[in-house]
Length: 348
Image (cartoon, rainbow, N blue to C red; front, side, top):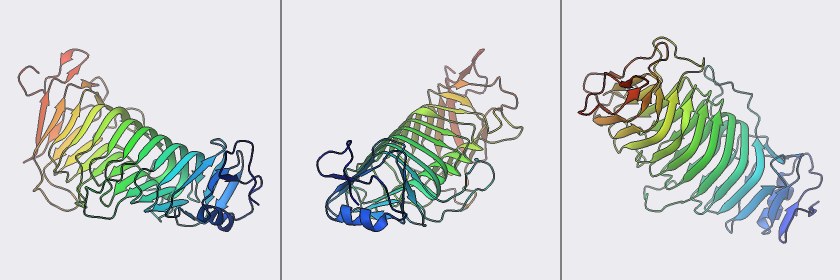
């Protein structure tokens, strides 16, 4: 059944005509040390593949090659093993999700799940229709110094419960050139030291969520350049006491394309050190000292909104709302007419 196509190189195995369920054959090839190449324009069905301890590579002849997971498991699971996944589309059985309402629940059907898998790489991969996370990245250890250091680039995720989920002491991942569109949550980070650059979140219920409630060495990562626009909530930060940086990020509008009256698009709860700077703000900002779920206010402190171009020309735009006991330093922000009136620091 394993036939090497013209696009294969030494040590790779490919299917020219995948069977109805390719799980057993592909798993045997992986366990034997083969790298896998999936055929362009065809769907390869699996109940879930496990990367062996020695690591492996799975790629498509091009991105039209589809790996379809049929059960509530990860299409590709690497636990303690290095994996390289590229030039591939990964799909599941979840219905299309349009970014409105509650959407599907998380049933654990993931595209790529990495657990303690340092040096892994995922590039030029599309993930869709998964009742779980497109990319599930974790390292179940309280020792955050055991860095995973994996790289993800050129990723497109749509119609899944979470586009990316970094949690359980996942550290040191780098995501670049990524778009999360029409998901329940575009990108959710519960662990720190994770860098996102040139990312886009569109038409999700929550574009970007920073969740420090789990206390997994949370927050203290950064987003460098990109946008979270036209989501129900463009940014939600909860109980983050270690800080989080958003530099050169745009947060504009809601899913209707404008600003709904009374809508709150950037929410910062029980957090300190949240810095939003050098971007474009077309979202209403609300800062509260209390986490609405846990009721905790012990992590509340100063946050920063600085040097942003403010789209105060948008109908229903409101200056930042600061709740009792919360803090938001505001300086250097400006609109079409110059500095905005609600800047509070000298020079604003």
